[in-house]
Length: 149
Image (cartoon, rainbow, N blue to C red; front, side, top):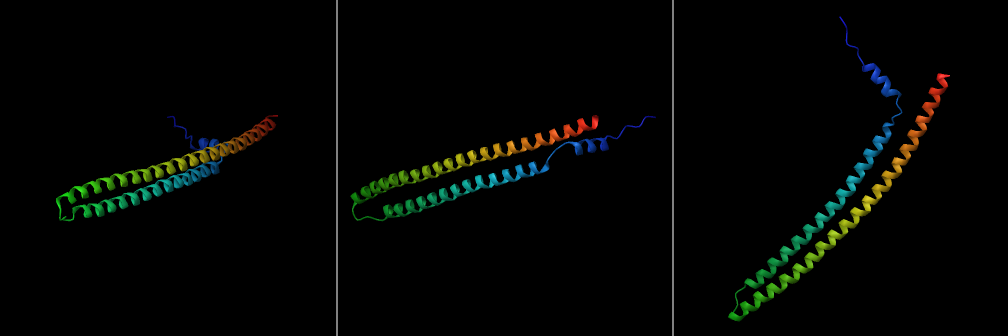
């Protein structure tokens, strides 16, 4: 009866002979983790600022609505209070939307800067890895050629 050959040892020997540098993978992982941390920081700062704006906007609206809801001695004062509230609400909306736009603009600029930096870093790492791999393959080829003679 024929026994199935075990290729485990053959595969281990073959993988051990290949010029693979695990530090390149570790470096890439660390770079990716650092980039993720930077992107998360940008997003969390934007969320924090947006929450602050929303909270302040709500508090201001409630305070102005409270003023508008007070009892008046003359009927015409109710109309004036409603007009003042609507005017103040429109002004607050414009200010707060402008503040949200500034946050979005800042996030966009920081994201572009991070992407450009990531591209530059990745390019430099890839060039270094290719140079190193080329040197290792050349060295291995020379050794193989010398052993074949």
